[in-house]
Image 1 (cartoon, rainbow, N blue to C red):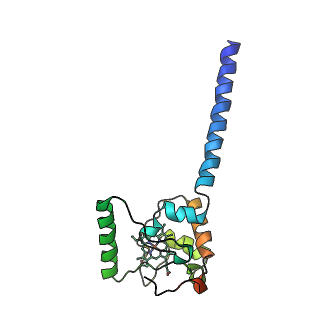
Image 2: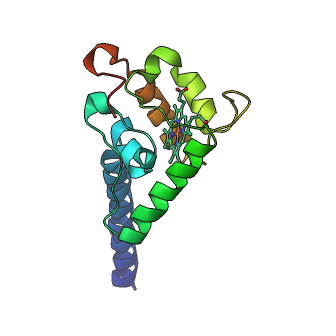
Image 3: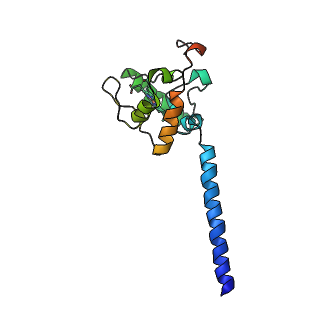
Length: 143
Ligand code: HEC
């Protein structure tokens, strides 16, 4: 009986350790705003040229065509996803957070994209974008 109890306790401890370990590594894996930006495919529409983040180019040709199509549709509607190299000069982190939460509008319209991450991830991403102020390092006319 004692052995069984000890066994259960040991399993609990191992389980807890694994659980905490995975928490830590998940935190590390997606910790920075830049990683979240890539993780959530923000570069399906936005570049950050100052950091050499260019448009996503899916390997799958069908996905690639679909992505081009939706970008063309946005353009036709006059909704052009801007390069975000200097977004921190335009908006602060709090605004950026609300924008991703669909609580802010630009020209009467909310963000095209629904943010699928957690509130914490949204905050980290917003904080990071608020620091992007690279006006001197890139040419806005570059395509
Ligand atoms: C499907 C295309 C698309 C995706 C994907 C997308 N956006 Fe956007 N985003 C836009 C468009 C278009 C605009 C311009 C405003 C408008 O017309 O909606 C915009 C505007 C913005 C702005 C405000 C820019 C400004 O100059 O004020 C920010 C910040 C932003 N997006 C961040 C993000 C982040 C972060 C992600 C990823 C979580 C993301 N976007 C994913 C299309 C997209």
